[in-house]
Image (spheres, rainbow, N blue to C red):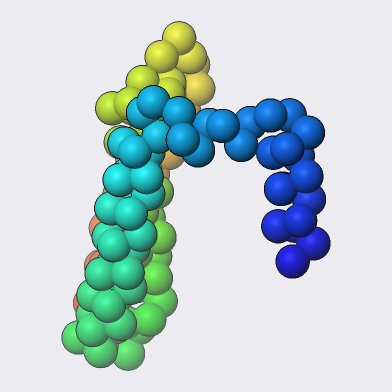
Length: 114
């Protein structure tokens, strides 16, 4: 509750409450709703997948779930141009995504051995 009140105070103090009705705000709301729907569906799929993945299903599934959410959010940021003009951090981001994918492979192999 304290965070909400503080956020409202800052919105009024800075005059940024107008941003919620500014041109283009609808597109941001649509993205937020789409993201929430995808997150909700992903949690449902994760819950089902944990049972199908075997004894380490929760561990393997959680790694895949969070890693995939990071990769998708990074891809969305790249698509929207958030990384424009930041070549070195963008390269680090891409390497991080590669590490996530490689970790899935390693954990998948380990899960098949369990």
